[in-house]
Image (cartoon, rainbow, N blue to C red; front, side, top):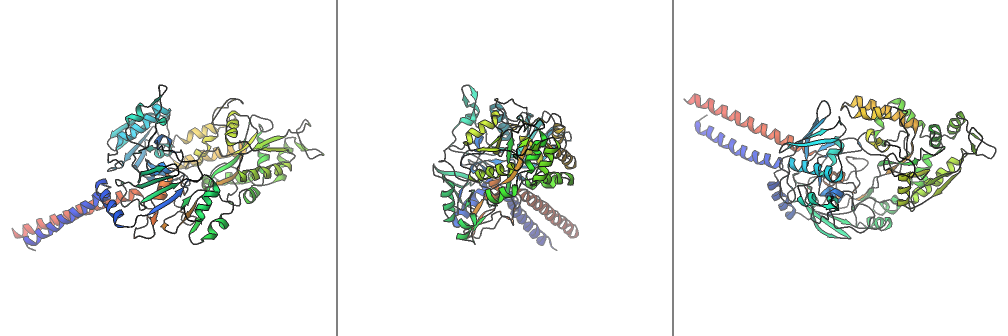
Length: 614
C-alpha cells in the first residue's frame, strides 16, 4: 500500500464521513434540511388531501387556543400542538415525542424528562425546555392546574425536572399528555376581570410543533397543510387535511357513503347496510370498546344507599340484550369491575371471577341477594323491605335524543320489574341531566363518568372525592359513594408511591375487589369508539387486524399518531409501519458509531502504512 493509496482512502473516508454526517443531521431531525426536503417532495408528487369529520358538530369557530384543545372541532389541535409523549390509553404504550425519555427519582418525588433536539415551531422558532416550563407554569398560574407539582425547572436546554409535593409515579400520563406551546406574552398577560385568563384569548394563527399548520378557515371547512418545519423525517405524507362540518349523524353518514369524507366518527344504526355495503372493498369501520356506559346511582338515597341492593340491581340487568337491541350489537357488555375492557389483564383470577359474577344476568341471584337481607316479593310481585313496606318507585333518566339509550333504559326497566321494582324513565336534555347529577337531584341516570387512562388506577379517578350533600354541586364522586369504611384510598394512594408494576397491580386488585363488591355505579356496556374510514386513495388505517392506536379522529394527541401512519396510495410514499420516533435517534447514534469506527480503522491503517514506509 502506498502513501498515495492511503491518502485516497482517507479522502474517501472523509467524504463518507461528510455524507454520513449529513445523514446524521437529517436523521437527527434538522428542521432546515427536513423543511427543504419535504417542500420539494410535496411539489414533485401529487398533492394528497384527506377529508375528515370528528363527528356531527355545530359550525366551526375560528379559535385555536391551545388551552382549549377539546373544543370543536375536537381533534384538530392534535395536528398543530404536540405533547411530550403519546400514550395509548388502550394498553399503556408510551411513544417518545417532544420528550425522548423520562425517569422518576427512586422516591417518586421527581420526574426528569429529556427533550428532543432540533425541533422547531411552525414559525421557525426553536423548541426547548423554556417552553415546557412556561406551559406548565402558565397553566398553574391561570387555571390552578397541576397542584401536586411544586416546582418545574429547566435543568438545561433539553432537560426538565418536575418536583412533586408527594410521590406521584403515575403522573407521566398527565404530564406527558400536555400539549406544549411557545412562550407568548399575550397569553400570559391575558386577564378577565383582573384574573389571569389565557383561555379567553382568540387564537386565529396557531403556532405549534405539529405536522400541520392552518391554511384557511370557514365555519364549514378548515384546511390544514404540511408544516415545512416538522421534525419527523418525511412526515406527514398527506399534504392537506380538510375538516368538514356536518351538523347531524344522517348528513355525515351520507357523506361517508358517498366518499366525501374519508375519516369520521359517527353512529350509524346499521353501518354494514348503510356504509360498507355500498363499497365493501373500501368502506370500512372498526368500533373498539371505549369508556363504560354506566347507571350512575345516587348512593345517598334509599334503597340505593345499600351495597347489597346495588349488587342485586347489577345482576338483574341483561347486558347482552342492551348490546343486541339498544346498541345494535356494537357495544360489548361491561365487566363488574368498572374498568376498560382492554385492562382486564390487570385482574387476578379472583377479581376476574368477581367482575364476571356481578355483570352476568342472573335474576335468581338478584332475588337471593335481596332475600338474604330480608327483601321479598309480595303477592303482587312487588319488592318489599324487611319491615313489609313496598320499595318505592325509582326513576331512571337518559339524555333526550339518544335513541339507543332510550331503548336501553326501557330494557333495564323491564328487567328490574322481575325483581319487583317499578322504574319510571325520563329523557331530559343533556344539560339538565348533567346539572341534576352534579347537584345530586336524581336517583339513577345513564352516563359515562368513569375516568380513562393507561391502567385501571386512572379509571377509578372519577369515583372518589368528598361526599357533597344533595343540592350542592360536585363534579367528582357524583354518585356520592361513601368508601370511608373501606381501605380504598389506602390502595389508591399507595399506587402513586412506586413505579413497580407488581406492587401497582396488587394495589389495583385491592381497589377492584372493593369497587366490585360495593358497586357504587353499575357498568352496562363499553361505549363504542365510532370510527369509519374509506381507503380508496389513502392507506395506513388502524383496524381490528392492525389495532396499532386509538382510531377516533376527535381525540387530540392520539389522532396525530394515526395521521402520521396514513399515506396516499397513488404515490410512491413509503407507509409508516409503526416506527417510533425514538428509532430515528437510535439510527443516528448507530451511524455516528459506524462513522467513528470507520475513521478509526482508516486512521490506524494509515499510521501503520506510514511506519512501514518510514
